[in-house]
Image 1 (cartoon, helix red, strand yellow):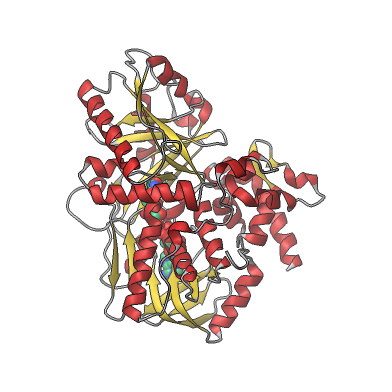
Image 2: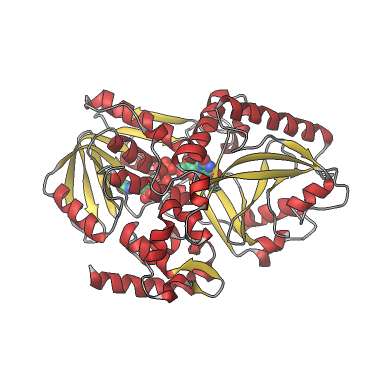
Length: 512
Ligand SMILES: Cc1cc2nc3c(=O)[nH]c(=O)nc-3n(C[C@H](O)[C@H](O)[C@H](O)COP(=O)(O)OP(=O)(O)OC[C@H]3O[C@@H](n4cnc5c(N)ncnc54)[C@H](O)[C@@H]3O)c2cc1C
């Protein structure tokens, strides 16, 4: 990495002023979800000059509402989509071992063999796990990173997921996949790494119109309108892509998760896989998170009509998730256990059949006036999507650039697990900031209060909020509470942290 990875209000103002004054960039990226941030990094690291905009904030869209998994593509394998499965397994390995070992980790998944799982379904699942392991091997991910699947005894199953129904339990099936510390933090790390390679990262700039050589843009903080000129334009606006480029059609599908206290499932050490009755390859997953929470999802409901900025989970979806989990749990979950819920819209490419069956492949499309749109895919494969989009832009617009470098480009904070383990910083910070954890802690200066939780029972510290304002481009309390940290996933935590977030933002505004 070469330059400064810090994003803040002063840098945004400076870079925006230069662009509004007529500076021309090689590539203008629209959308700063995982795809757009990945495109910005890919292009900047090839030596291209880049500006990347988001109408709201980094990770404002679908990228913060995912299941926070880096999948090996088991599900695609089951459907015979071997190409997508291999691509997912390869990208998972790159994230876990090279580019983001600080933000990813292996997660054990347990399918308890309760009476709800007939022997035939168990045999199919076991065969699928073995095929997934072969895929891991083919993709070059070592067994030390993702261990092989195996059968569990009933006692081992209940040890890993204590809440599992004991009556009739025949054991369990264990396999491993990748989990992200947090999806929004991956986007932030990508954007900051891109910034270190010179990309101008510009939240709160809405593209009103796109053409092949630029965009009409509104700075939503000031209302000012101006044109940004570029040699190539890449539209990475996910479910909103069709609003900017006519002819791009998507079939959004809503996926909802509920947030539960880990204690309600007996404190699981593994993800619980609960089969959806009547469907042989659909499951609800209860995914343990480090701060005593479990995210359980997910639904798959086609969405018609206008695309909302922030999708809302429905009571029917929440009820469905609890009902499926309760089929395999002794500890009955009720609506009162739900601490929060979140929903996202998958940017699926059109095809026949149910949205649950639509392929997760991605597409790169070029409009008649040369705007390159990259859509579909998933979080795990963002890097490959970005590479394909930048390759297309280079080819279509005749840009001079080096080859893609991102398979070997560590994101800010990345380091091998042994190096991270030796860092002199709180483990929670190491998990979320990797090598930068000691610097985050140092934000507290000589104020020990900034190293304490922002409110009782809320794990985030004031130092993290300050770091987010000074180095991660947080401009508002929503940026702090809903994207740099994920306190907003539990409304009670958000409310408790709000006064501290406001106070720190006000103090920083005076400092700038
Ligand atoms: C419920 C759910 C669970 C999922 N779980 C997983 C998972 O575990 N693993 C996995 O690999 N994938 C998962 N996915 C898929 C994955 O989350 C998405 O494919 C991915 O996040 C899409 O990212 P994106 O950058 O293309 O879109 P987005 O993240 O939606 O980014 C688009 C951005 O464009 C901005 N924008 C829109 N219009 C404009 C404009 N006019 N001007 C400027 N900016 C604009 C938006 O503000 C937004 O920030 C899941 C998806 C869902 C819905």
